[in-house]
Length: 322
Length: 290
Image 1: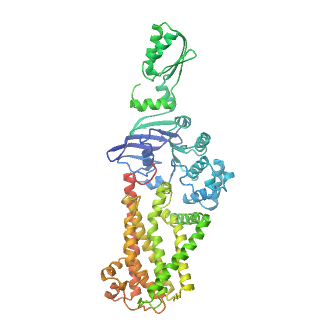
Image 2: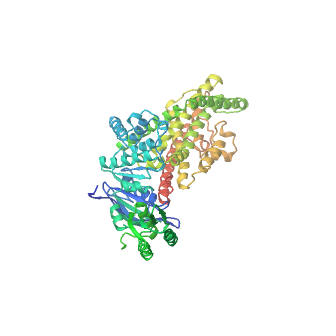
């Protein structure tokens, strides 16, 4: 997805404090219609506070904003009636002693769908979820992954334009995570839903996000596409140097660069060189000084995890020159 | 109008769901019937013991009938007054509060909907109390002015639900999320238990407690129901202090007071609950999801 027409969420200078603790500090963000916007941050960074404010379950202390064109502070009921939420706990909204079908039918009525339309929508959703065959099974009998899908199914029953997914794959096994991620992509493709996602899984954010926001201690550190973040922050972190070195030289190198967690395996030196340092330059200089013949140098680009820790660790801001 | 219809349809959906859940525990139904029977029997045994020397005039002379009506008011009050706080707590702790808030439902609809479980559990006890009283313990009833009887029961239900909503509002307003809820405790376990007159006419209470009983809808509801339903009861002799002061027919005064209390408590209950939600939205205690 690259052509996002309009901003569906606009926040301006949103600040929230809990006592003396600042949860969000002058947050400004715009989320475009139809994009998957991911919020990354450590525990307590302010991710959930941000989502709660956008879906009007929490009032900011200051700042303003619009969601779907509605005023965040004055038209909260209209916003709440037009957004869907999947909270982190797998079983929320899923009653174990109701069947899969009964669970969704209940929520269909709560969301204002009527009679035949409700039945049609529930069956359609079950088919999209891949749960149609399990429709008559009790929710307590199906797997955690299926229950999580059911929770997301509840949230998409009414095709609200915005879907909030707060850690949707937490506690799920690898297979269930894979299914849910594909399902999230599918929901966006089918319905053009704008998805605001929080996650602790960097691979999930890499796979799903159109744009990523990194937040720490209530401050937005950066908002950008993964490609742009990588371009700005590109530097090999894990460096592999294949070299012809004597045992003595190997020992010396390993001892000199202990801060880079060096290893030597099968004639290859491996270093963990922090990005945005002159560590690599330093290592190569020593190799030259010690007259060690370098056969090959390779490196591994930083993933989102490395970018995240770099951004959070340095307090990097979007407009700062790198 | 469509909004209202959607709320009613949602309450029906809640009712169906609660019914499915309630009936899914087969053993529970058996234990529930036994529980109702044993409890009712205990109350009747006690009432028979005390009833021999109890003067219940002007509410006729059948003490068992007198107690059946007391028990019925107790069951209705127990559900309507005691349940809203528990239901708000339930949807808060199981995380569905967020989902209901992010839906077209009014703030009150989920509470009423989920209360249906207690309605299933408690309201049939009223019928069983009548049945056991009539079958085994010699209770008899008249159904003088059935429309008034139904009206009194409805007003008792509304007013006690209003007090229940005041109690529920403390969940957010006072941020009382665990432990004993003080409003419910004070009303249900102290004032109502002492002064509602479930098992004795309030005329036997010390005068200060009689005055206290005037603040309870139960007092007026039980006065009206007993005058209308206990054989031989007098509908004109004043019993309550207010009836002695005001020159209005006792049952009319009961209806006026019940109506006033219904409006007052429902208004206060909803007002405080909504205020509690607003407060919780400001301080971040509205949802368990963190």
